[in-house]
Image 1 (tube, rainbow, N blue to C red):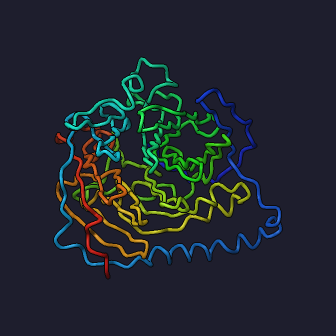
Image 2: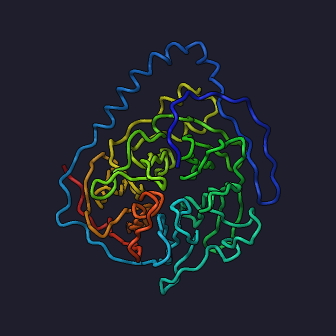
Image 3: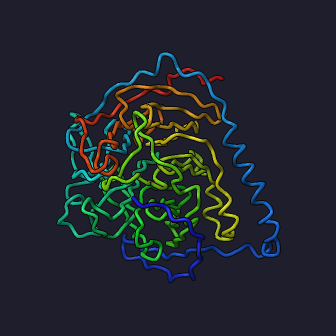
Length: 410
């Protein structure tokens, strides 16, 4: 985790394209994107729109309609526990097995990616070799940072390349076919797309592109998974940069291992079911929304992109954002142990508050409308607890039937 630095984005010259070697793909990077030729003469208009865009964004943030909290709260069912790992991301396969990720940045020594068998016992995923430190770096998961399961059974894994000891390895994107538990491709993230203090923390895949959040030096890296090109965009954009402390349970301000106020930039992402919208936030909030067409169009100018994020909701710190099949966002409030929903009609409602939700983290909604939420206790790990390890084992995963909830009304 790094403190944000207020500085302008400085475009870099184009970098050479990467090569494809079997299933190991290396992508080229660009720090900037060219202007649309027919818009070059309209730079003045673009500057004039900045204020209007800001006003529109602020209006969007206020437009959500609050609904009364569900009373009683949605019932939660415990489905898994861990006495050794602070799982902060989960996905669920069609057969009900849970894949869980344990982050390396917390300061807790723990395995990276596991799958729980029918007895809820964890096993390395996709296999032991891919989680073995003795395996060559290119054929193993060094430090999984985010996971995403698509409807066709594809599991996408973001590997930050930074293990618990802070050593820096090769960050990469890994594609796994969960029907066979086989890695089908990996893409290296080029060094040219990174900065010395980069720490990749969030990723969503859609439209043939990976959208990767750099928490260490806030930016979005957009990788064309078919064409193998990569661009670093929106560096130090306010929408990606933490602008306030992280308020955890009981109103505590989270402290890093050195005892200073913890700063976590863009670290949560979600993508709409139609893959048209990307939602993201620094851990402290708030949530922003951005069209994926803007991110993947190389003709969009830097100034247009800089002002494209919409402030979607003035939110508290969320430990996870998940999207249901109907586009409803499920938002996990770490400060109160609550889960909210934000419907496509922009109705905002608390569906549960429960003391068991100690830092509700990266959750998953199945096509059948079952919400799985890990209570990760990250506020009790050294990285957010002033260097102190105070996790009260076990860590729990809960399930909520959100498909059965009454319609949100205000």
